[in-house]
Image (cartoon, rainbow, N blue to C red; front, side, top):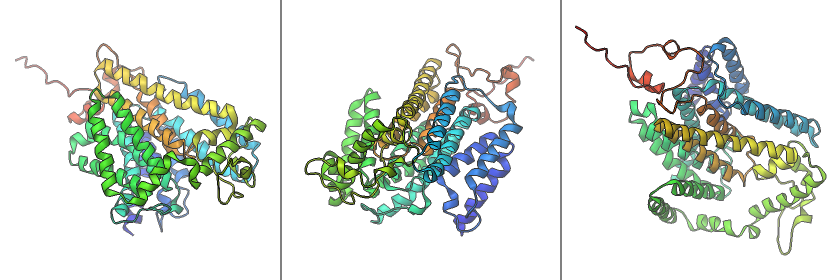
Amino acid sequence: MITDLLLSVVFLTIMALGISKPSVAMAGVIWVDVLRPQTMSSSFLVGKPVSLIVVLVLCVSLLLGWKRWSAPVKKANLVLLPIFMGWITLTTTEALFPHYAWWKYDIAVKTIFIAILVSLVLNSRHKMETAIWIFVISVGFFCTQAGLKTLIGGGGYGVHLLNASSGGITESSTLSAAAIMALPLIFYLIKHGLLVKEFPLLRLVLYWFIAASLLTMVGTYARTGLVCLAAFIGLNAVASKDKWKYVLGGLCVAAGLAAFTSDEWATRMSTVTTATQENSALGRIVVWRWTIDFVKDKPLGGGFQAYLANRYNLVDYIQGDEFLDRVTDPRAFHSIIFEVLGEHGYIGLFIFCTILSYGMWCNYLSQRQGRRSGELWREDMAIALARALIVICIGGLFIAIAFYPMIWFLVAFAVSLHNVPFTAETGQRESTSGEPLARELRPARTSIYWQYRGFPPPAKPPDVR
């Protein structure tokens, strides 16, 4: 009852404030797409098209406040994303399984469309941090539930720590990857978050999210989470001057896992290096072999949910003494690369990889710009977004999440971060509306207002008496 009331209040607040404030509406879209509150409610939000409603609120808000739009400094995303939307529309019209394809198409197109709008809305530091907070809290909500269940011994292979019917990121491998993906963003908020500086006790919440993320990775028994954690530690170690700290930290984490986890968990993780000897991993490999042959005959892909075509065909791709049970059942792609390749062909995969590369390029430019202008927060935000994107993509090599909001939001955040440039000489923000800065900003009484906009507090006027 309390959860229903809280979700309903948040939703109605977003509706009320989002009409006049596009950034609030965008925060609501991120919250709904990641958390999916309609699947948790048992009263008010049940059966409501919540996602569609918040998107409509965002569109109306953008139309009413069109003067607040800010065209991206780098506009390639305004070309790449519509091209990709057009291509998946084309492949869906020729899909092998149109009934299932159009269902997934609706979700995918909306996600990509929102990614386009993000770069028009998130054009300041405080808006960026608000979006990251919503992103982290939404993932942290799931990790809190999963982490607490793990603490009381509720984890295990094949055990659903969360209600699988709610969809989203509740599937074990996806949840573990998302949990580790959130870590670099959490560390950024601890170090630079303006809200954390104003309310230091919020650090305790973020520290809990770190612990809950690690507990979630353990409790899911998903090898994807362990691979993501290794990637995260490796990225930090490579970029650090004091690599020994991360080597020592990695050893401490390994020792903690060994002491905290069970023999069953250790046995499960050890199968990472023996993929062909474990049924779940072998199933992925067999499907990937089938996909390569499939696109030879259909280089433009088979449309969304094309994996259904491998029913009764996987037995031909088992080699040697490999054994795979339920070989007549269709198996999903279990990889963002093979998912896009099988569904949208080589052209679709090329566009998809170009979009991911463009997001990483924007992060690189923002990192360099922040270093040159002396804005440490900007440099570290770019690094956090880049590491989060790399981690989720590495995890995505083993799970089919190519059209999940997480990846697209991270790419959109990277473009948005580069949307408010700083001059290398002064470190000051350039005007995005063409108006002089004195006209663009209104004075405020509190210093936090100016901090949100990248400015120091106003200097006290000299005494001329």
